[in-house]
Image (cartoon, rainbow, N blue to C red; front, top):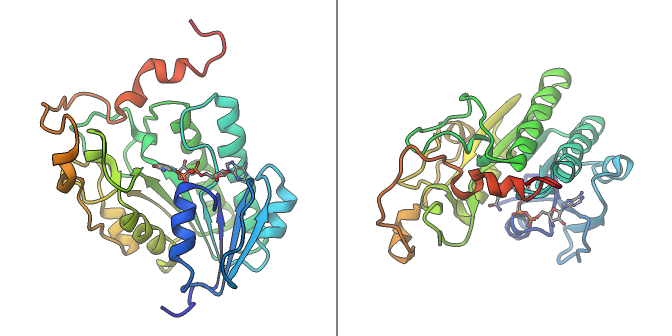
Length: 270
Ligand SMILES: NC(=O)c1ccc[n+]([C@@H]2O[C@H](COP(=O)([O-])OP(=O)(O)OC[C@H]3O[C@@H](n4cnc5c(N)ncnc54)[C@H](O)[C@@H]3O)[C@@H](O)[C@H]2O)c1
């Protein structure tokens, strides 16, 4: 592919998804700006690394100079105290959106999560128009992230695509992942589509593989231009409990929806 994507910024480039994306985009970009609060080393002539914390708005604005596309992955990816999630995920995303607005970035792709709807029951195929039902503080933070994205799209005409990412793993190694798995190949497919889909004022799409047991509607991703190809059930033989009966009334979030998962992060909670 020619370097048609121009200058792409990845926040959270040192993380699990950022590392995969960084390597995949090498031949498709003119410049790749890699941002993280932990140190990174440039590995090719197209790469430039910037160490910053998203809490520093001026630094984020400066890092986005000349950017065509921003893929925003940085943040806390799991349950944590609410104040930490608000800082890292919500205020961090605010700074990313505001910096993108000031630098007139063409498209922002934001890593949201399927856990914004983790309290819908397993029997329901959820699509992005259904009400949010977060399964914990992390899900709440991603609901706020999506709301900020919508605000910047509606108020400032910033083009933003939120991907509700499933369980990003090389292989599904847990029963719940048979529904929620997102393979690395499909993850890259969804992100590329979100980066390049023409004329999208705002969109939210689930990014999960074509798992037989999925409880997410994939139409929004198809409209962006990507239909996933991997299926977690192809790996079911290696997943302990894969043949156990399914409780269709249980929350989609599984163990993440349990009270204990969140209570652990509330200071002094009995
Ligand atoms: N991995 C998954 O299965 C999954 C599922 C759903 C959503 N997501 C979302 O996708 C994104 C990437 O996930 P991941 O698994 O690669 O996470 P990760 O924890 O591996 O990477 C996140 C990166 O963000 C950086 N970071 C965190 N706070 C920062 C800050 N304030 N300033 C600068 N950098 C900061 C971290 O140093 C880290 O390198 C996250 O937003 C996560 O919530 C991931």
